[in-house]
Amino acid sequence: MGVQVGTESDWEAEQTLNELEQLASTAGAVVVDRVSQRLSKPNVRTFIGPGKAEEIFEAAKNAGADIVFFDVDLSPSQQKNLEDIMANIKILDRTGLILDIFAQHARSAEGKLQVELAQMNYILPRLKGMWGHLERLSGGIGTRGPTRGPGETQLESDKRMIRKRIQRLTSEIEELKKNRSVQRQRRQKKGIFSVSLVGYTNAGKSTLLNALTGADVLVEDKLFATLDSTTRKLSVDHRKEVVLSDTVGFIKKLPHQLVAAFRSTLDEVRMADLLLHVVDAGHPRMEGQIRAVEDVLAKIEAEDKPQILVFNKIDLLDDADRERLKRIYPESVLVSAVNRTGLEGIQEAIEHELRKRTVRLHLLVPYTKGAFLQRLYSTGTIISETHTGEGTELVVDVPEGDLDEYAQFAHAGS
Ligand SMILES: Nc1nc2c(ncn2[C@@H]2O[C@H](COP(=O)(O)OP(=O)(O)OP(=O)(O)O)[C@@H](O)[C@H]2O)c(=O)[nH]1
Ligand SMILES: [Mg+2]
Image 1 (spheres, protein in one colour):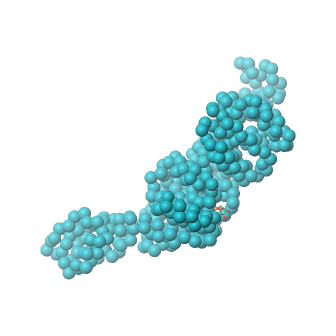
Image 2: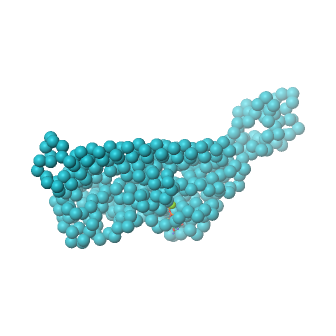
Image 3: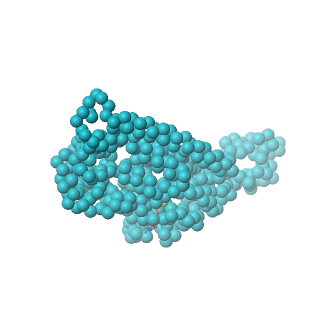
């Protein structure tokens, strides 16, 4: 069930419904029918109009459907009201569906904890609806008054249990997060430069990690194939060690429960020195996907990181499309991760980024080393310069990569 709210175009609505269908089949469902409705504003009780809900119920029954997926976020009461209308049919909203996929794909201990935390936070406000069902089934009259029915007592104790579980999960995740940040600090201390792959789900991040580093991360034509981060060494032409990390993909309206629960995984992105934003250049909603990724980056406070835009899957484009991309995004790199073409462009872009990093040095250059001084003028930025009896004393910002060369002239007093 797709809903076009406000000014969303038919094309846009069609594309988002396609994405919902892809999410549904990734979760293991077989889609038998698609319906959409245009709304100026959502109905408070049922989101879509109640008449439309009846209509969908009929269609779903006739098609033998078990579930109706809604491409919006339903409030707990809207979900319950819809379930009341559509007896024996499960109602799942976009967030519920994405959570289900995450639950199926979580492999690592940390991933599983994070998914469960997100699920618990999703379920908590929805418990009432679940118990409401049972109450009405088991009698009805009299259970709704000021006296507490058995369902309500059960509800209270379930809520307590879930809250406890949430606390427990939060502290276990916190524990793992500490380990992760120790590892990260070790890398930082060693001066390792860390690059993170980010991008819309299915853009080809894992394929690119594999192509660039020889890693063996699972690649699938499925949404959210990767949930855990993998970090591998990347060889670039620079004295600094560089690592590349792959992690969970983003999606339009990534559920906030997941963003919150995946904080520690997403820290990898937040702490990176450079982001490679991988884009599926062959996707019809490419621009919308770029925006969605930027939205998520803003949510995790990583929007100001240095970023290289990498257009992947260019094997699916013709020459005109490629030229158009280059024109609109002149700073970008065009690659095909499966065909391993254009990868040197990524290496160069990373090297370029590394060269931009400078360190401030205090040097004393003897007058006999005129050529060296010339080189300093051309590659470094002179902050101050004085001529002394022993030579030229300089404070200068030089590229990190050239550090070794200058070591011999380090000023004794610095
Ligand atoms: N044609 C084409 N397909 C590609 C290319 N790179 C990746 N793919 C395909 O795109 C699909 C997704 O690739 P992944 O590497 O799993 O994408 P991902 O970004 O890691 O996706 P998630 O982990 O699910 O978020 C797979 O079917 C890949 O084979 C490419 O350069 N060209
Ligand atoms: Mg992946």
